[in-house]
Length: 161
Image (cartoon, rainbow, N blue to C red; front, side, top):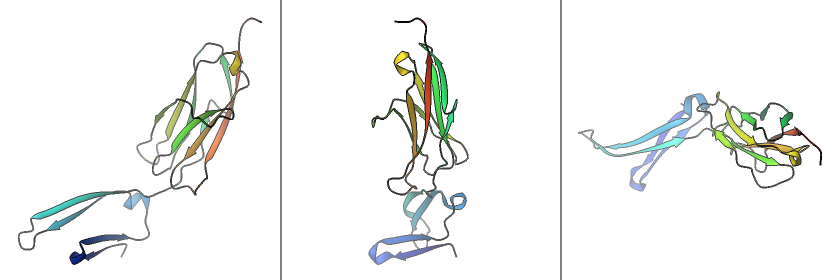
């Protein structure tokens, strides 16, 4: 038996024990209902979301680990990861900065759909040779562990100073 209810009404305790947990079978909403004897009328109902933790896949970068840009022309760098439950946290950092950059994130609706973070840049000559790092994390990963990938930027600019 994979699921069994353990209850102690005198203590107000109603526990659900799930063993051999699987994302496909068990991730989702469970509901506890207390019904009146005889009539079967629901006296109390409370739902709980069960999140089965799974690690995300390593980040994938687009356009890749090296990006070419034209000065002043908008450039999108994307970083994606699939498989995480809950959806992974994806953040972008410039060079050695500890402060994440502003990026748009769209979380996948299932584990097979990628969560994608898009960093939009309007590069200038100071960005030539800059490195941007994408970091992926979710709470299924061991404490302090993160996955990352970097992209180096080359900016083409006109004119000389």
